[in-house]
Image (cartoon, rainbow, N blue to C red):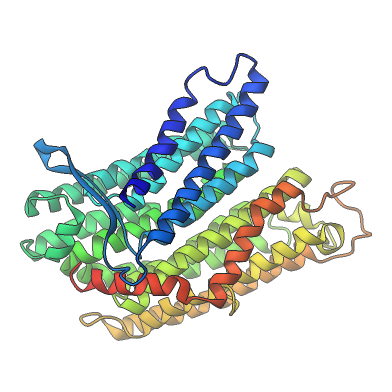
Length: 518
C-alpha cells in the first residue's frame, strides 16, 4: 500500500511534467484535445489507485497510520519524506481524487475560455500540478513537507483564476495569492518554532509527545501562528474576504476544487497539527476560534440573504461562496469544542461540504454557460427562471443540492452540523460551557438563515411560469457529460446522509487517538 500512496503523488506529477514536452503533436487544436484527454486519463488512474488504497486500508484500525513511507530527505535540517494515511486523511484523499477526475472529465468537454488564454496543454499541466499539491497535503507527515504541499497548490490555482477566469479575474487572483501566501508565512513561523523547540518536524513524533517539552507560552505562540495561517485557507471570518472574489472570477472547475478541496486543507491542518501537537496552546485559543466560527456562520448566512433578495443584483456564484463561509464556520466550531463528537462532526462536514458545494458550483457554472450570466435577478426575471419547466433535470439537481446544503436530515449536510453543535453544547474540560452554548445558539440561528436564503434561491431559480419570456430563447437541459460529472456527487451526498457510519467509523478512532496524544 505504501507503493500505491507514492504512485498517487508521482503519477500526476509525472503527467504535469509530460505536458511540457512536445508529445501531443504539432497541430495546436489536436494537441489541446489530446492534452485534455491525457489529464482525464491521469486523474482517472489516480482515482483508481485511490480506490485500491481505500480497499486495502485496514478498517479495523483506522487510528493507525497505514501505507507509510519514512526515509530521510534533507538530513541537514531533519526533514524526512514521511507519508501515510489514517481515518482522518483517507476520506479527504478519496474526495480530492474524485473531484479532480470529475473536473478533468468536465473540462474535456467544457474548457473555460477567455481573452488571451494560453493552450489547453497549459491548463492540463497546471491542473495536474494542482492535484499533486492537494493530495500531498493530506498524505505528508512532516511539518515542512506539509508547508511545501500547502504552497504547491497556490500557483496553479492563481493561474486558473487569472488566465481562465472571468470578470475581475486578475484582481481576484492577486487577492487570493496575497492572502494565502501571507497566511502560509505566518503558519511556517509556527512550524519552525515547534520544530526548533521539539527538535523534530515529524508530525507523528510531535503528536505522540502531545506538547511535552514545549512550554505553555511556546505552545500559545505556535498555536496562534499556525491557527491564523490555517484560518486564512479555511476560511474563517474575518480572514475570508479573498474567497467571494476568487469564486466569482474562477472558472467552474476552479470553484469546484477551491470549495471542495482547498478550503479543507486549512481545517485538516487544524485537526492534524494543532490539536495533537500544541494541545495546551489550542485549549487557550479555542474559545476565540469558537467565537469567530459562530460569527462567521451568522455573517455568511446574512450576506447570502442580502444577495438573494430581489433587486440586489446578487451573483449566484458569489452567494454560494459566502455560504461556504457559514458552512466552514460549523467545521471550525466543531474543532474548537476539542471533543471527539465535535471534531468528528467537523470532519464529516468537511466531506459533506466538498460534495454538496462541488455540485452547486457545477450547476451554477452550467446556468452561467446557458444564460451568459450568474446574476440572480437576470436569471429569475420577474416571474422566476422556471427551471422546473424549462430544464427539469437541472432544476431538480439544483433543488436537491440546495436542500442538502441547508442540512435536510437524510442528506450529507445534516450530520456534520448537528455533531458540531453537539460538541459545542458540551465542550472539553477547561473550556467555558456558557460561552460555547452561546456559540451553539448562534450556529442554530445560522441554520435557520441558511434555510431561508437557499429556499429563496430555489423559489427564484427553479419555480416560475415557463411560458413567460426568458433571458434565452431555449435552455438546454442536462447534457450527457454533465450527468456523468455530477451524478457521483449527488449519489454520495445521499449515501453519506443515509449511512453516516461510513465516514464516522473511520474518523472516530483516529480523532480519539489524536486528542489523546497521537
